[in-house]
Image (cartoon, rainbow, N blue to C red; front, side, top):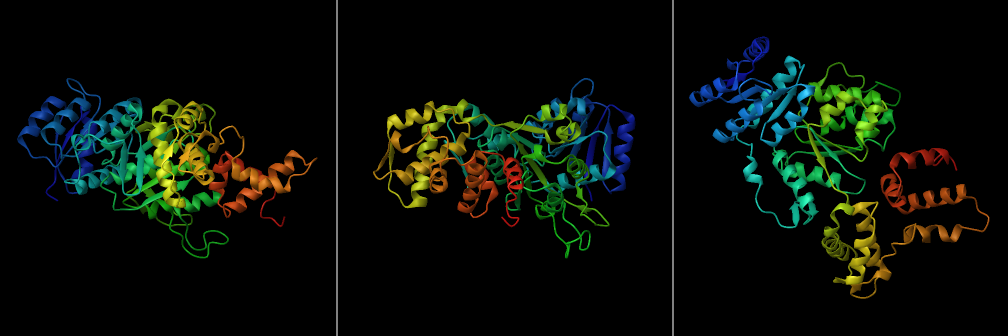
Length: 456
């Protein structure tokens, strides 16, 4: 292969083990026991790649990484770390590390990461190439993030700086802040942007269906499996997979996902052999995963695997300076969609929007603007078009008004509202949950309670 790799680790046993694995795969290897010796050798030999531990005497792996990237920005650097130094791994990704390997790891994991690094050489972009001045619209293809807020800009800058790597990203934030949009933004700024972006809502399907959806199944592996099904991980091969609402994943599927992240392979249900994959994983959650770990509803080892690069999206309450900018953006967007000619929003209406609490964040704001456009018959949106004080969306009120009678029970009223909303959105449960302001799991539980779709 004519690929020469430099290994830097202060543990002799680790250097020996790494050398054996890589030489068996056909690579040429040189090893040193500390970063100073590593830099001296790096100046003399044109290494294809560097593998270094984080915790070492004299200089750390992070300091070593910075110097190597200064000397040779396109040389991939792989970091070896442990649970105790996971924060250092995050710092390493910010500084340009290609990927990290979490101890303990198998020979197959090492081979896989090294091969991806070799294949990607020449495609890696330096942090400096991403840190260029950006306008308020952070746009790429179909993904547009609208902001002028300093905190949000920092999130986008970090997303850009880590986009080229293959490391797992955990995007956290309240519902409606734009977590999926940020995931798409990362994908579109990566060297995988010409490959698939596959999104999976982990709360949208029950456990058994979700397992097949994620990992696939073989024909005859269970009743009803009439043919082979390729799972989302395989469909996203060489691209990016978004695992939305990761906190809703069943514990048994969490264990299977952990293996996918560790081994870079999936096992189809009923399959005889694992399928190798190269997928960048981005997970999102609006829950506190630390609390979920304490409650034993989320695996701590999976959390460490996902939380390599944590991104926190601020709520709209924390970036109210963006509200006028977002309002004008949504006016333009939905006027075009609905063939309206509204060009302005009054100062009074902007003040109303800015003073609102926005529990539904940017998604709620967009819904309010879209509704205002439909209700406005002039060329300027005023406060009376906003309907912020109503507990239900106007469309929902219109849906249930004809069927409500004095004496109707709350149970029946709720049932009618849910069924009518589902009918309005043509059975799209995700959209219905969004309009009703509940989680997809809550909606699914309510539908089970009402026996929706079972001969009502």
